[in-house]
Length: 240
Ligand code: NAP
Image (tube, rainbow, N blue to C red):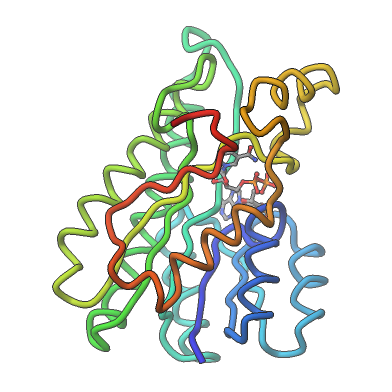
């Protein structure tokens, strides 16, 4: 039975991934930061197979403590899903240095911390899976999302470099790049905006967290063993 650590597992795509991996028979470490109640309620659905652990992924000491706890309870982490993220829409000229740094810290440095903590066990056992969650904006850039786009593009670079470095150790590293997915991250959008986004999408709909989680599960599985360094768009054809 594999142990999977999912960052940002308390809501949205991450929560759906927790359900999918747990239902597939994995032990799941559910990382959360602010949403303690949601994280604990979700873990309770899976009686002992899902372990909620709080850590701000941007903070090295908290991430190290989370991996120590995961190892103590479930053993080493075999599969790492770097999903935690925050969104911010703002004109580039209005961005503060603090906002810029926080965006890079959560998305990119967060993945750096988690990958560094996860890899020693994966390399030792010569098997591991890392899947990062970027965004279509990391592929093509989003207006008023410069910091987010830069962080997500950085995540793609990290994924590709790590795939080359860790391939010889039996570890694959891939990236899922969602399009517009119906989660809390879309809360700021009006009904009119949501419907315009759906119309713009070739398949004519917003994506669901489940559709992204299915891609994560596939890339984390045995059947994806010859796939590494790839970016898989889950975007209804919005970015091809
Ligand atoms: P969401 O519903 O807002 O959930 C975000 C998750 O990230 C929450 O579980 C949150 O946990 C966690 N998180 C935020 N900051 C964290 C931190 N510092 N440390 C640990 N966890 C943290 O968002 P989502 O739509 O599911 O997004 C998941 C991922 O997909 C993100 O990386 C996002 O950028 C990416 N994505 C989303 C879309 C979309 O349209 N929704 C599109 C492309 C890419 P707490 O609530 O516990 O803090």
